[in-house]
Amino acid sequence: MKSTPGTAHPPSAGATGRTDLGRRLAARREALGLTREELGRRCGADGNYITYLEEHTASPSIGILVRLADVLGVTVDDLTGASTGGVHGRATARRDTQLVPLDEDECRTLLGTHGVGRIAVFTPEGPAVLPVNYLVAGPAIAFRTAVEALAARAAGTEVAFEIDNIDDITAGGWSVLAVGELEAVTTSEEIRHLAATARSQPWAGGPRTHWMKLTPARITGRRVVHRS
Image (cartoon, rainbow, N blue to C red):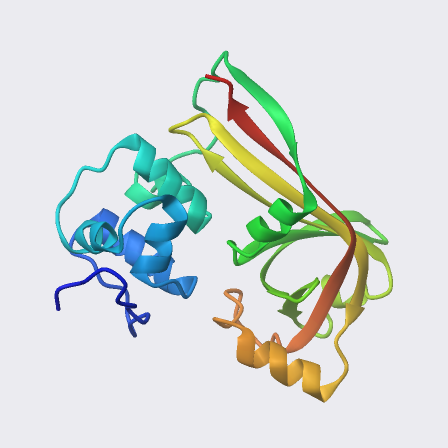
């Protein structure tokens, strides 16, 4: 069906796209629940152009790729498939860069672009960092784990949660860190809401039905930017 300006396209049951770029773009857009028009508006493009990128062979400029990747919360390499099998962070640093802090609103926006992060907890054997599938639920960061897991046993303690984005094409990236007390979700109503909101099951598999949440006492972030 031909796209027309102002026409919303609901996410499809499966990612579309005829090229690697198109499939990756469509899969990430649909995972975030964005229409083509919404994605276009956020990155300064037309919804018809997003349709073209998803359904035809195209060579978009690095500028549009950077904007698309930023809105979708991935890297340019991730979007184009160049990062497959590669090692992140080995690009040569640029001379025109600086590290700038992110305000809390931008940090919270970036938290909503990812679905996997790392939670750092203290254990009797020392600190541990655990990858988790998560979602943003109001002011809280929520995830599922096993009732006997390290993360579940950390309830009532201060923990840190981190996500980041590394782009070897632009030698840039950002990170967001949230710190606060971890607690178990105990009310049936909140558990039902989180289960209905979650976009997927935990990738680690197994009986991970124990919901935990972190309501950050502070959120900080940093971004590598290029001055020129």
